[in-house]
Length: 359
Image 1 (cartoon, rainbow, N blue to C red):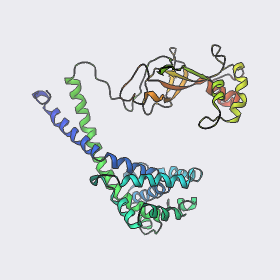
Image 2: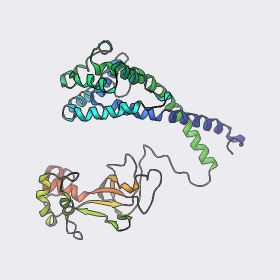
Image 3: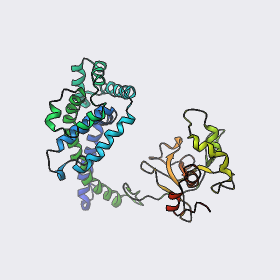
Image 4: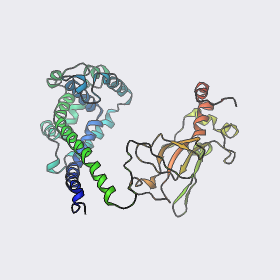
């Protein structure tokens, strides 16, 4: 219909281009997903990749460098390198890295990752390669990581450290992949508005808006649900219920919180109907990736909670909203205030928020 309308001849070309761009994007999705894992999951490889990327970008004027690798970003990178001292667990890191490497060997021929394939062959196999990598301790030490922040491109490319050598090979290849993706993203940014205009012109009724990056409002009720026969999930949980679940993994709670639970029903944050301080509540509100941290307000515009999750039965809600099962999970603002008041004794913060601690 679009192509047949002479007034909208430009739409047909944009739709054809959009289809081709999406086809290109999908043609390498397995490879791209694994590359994302390889560049983010093995922590020491991520350090080496970041350092080499930073050194490479230093060749250019600051304004022309990749976002995240300008002079102003060095402090944040250093902070991440320092935080790794508390978060690095080498056995877990190695196990995750191995799983990713094994998965790369199942990629179809047109989605292979050449630097990874070459590294595996040169190392004599995945396990031999991992043994050599994790035997190197240079980047385990904070000083070794920080030295990467002042190294130049030549330093990296002449390095004998196995992590750095792998990072140089992977980043050199990935630089071209990123360049292709940027060109594709630019083209998508050009043709998608044309496609949306075509939908608006030719599809009757209201078009669901593309609202990424915009303020979203969702309306609903506090309401539990029944996922299956005999199972009923009430809309609210309480401190007493939370404490009763603390019997080992995955249910844990700080001792100082548990110590205050017996006094909670008599606190000013207690709900008279529940006879306890409410912790979380369920609503029929819709949410999506990025909704965590959003305020939940009542009909009077008062903040009553903060969104942080979605129930398991609603994992498909990004594509289909089911009124019977889709629920957002919010922490009750009274639990937050109770924590600040009775557990943390943070009177200064309560006063800053305009809450009278003694009332």
